[in-house]
Amino acid sequence: MYEITGTGRAVAREWLLDMPATPKEEFPGFPAALSHLLMLAPQEICDALERRVRTLEEALAAADLSGESGYDIRGTTFPGVALLEDEYLRVVVAAELQWLWSVVDDLRSGDLTWSAAISAEDSE
Image 1 (cartoon, rainbow, N blue to C red):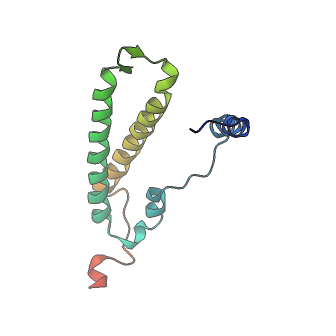
Image 2 (image 1 turned 180 degrees about the vertical axis):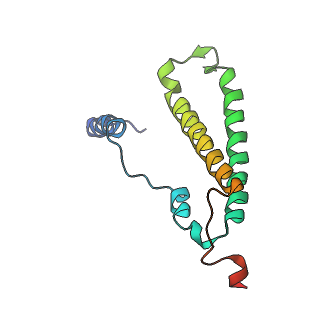
Image 3 (image 1 turned 90 degrees about the vertical axis):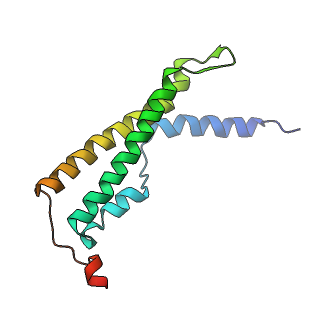
């Protein structure tokens, strides 16, 4: 049988107090990809971002549907604090979608454009 030790509990508490209080440089792959967009043509990026938009919209719609039923498992309703993670993730996805649509609109209108340094045609 396993059980949490006093030291383990202290480390967990320290981590739980530090993580929400301290913003960290968390650098996922998407911003890394954005830093290399000059290698592709604007239309290629527009198409790719539109695919990302569709994927995120589907995920957001699914999250909204699952959230309608509440957080009731076997008759036990959890306090609102148990939903903070889901709320945070929903807000982050909604903000990303708003930003993505502005970039896609700028790409479609030609307000955001460039000459691809290395495009698919150049690599053939």
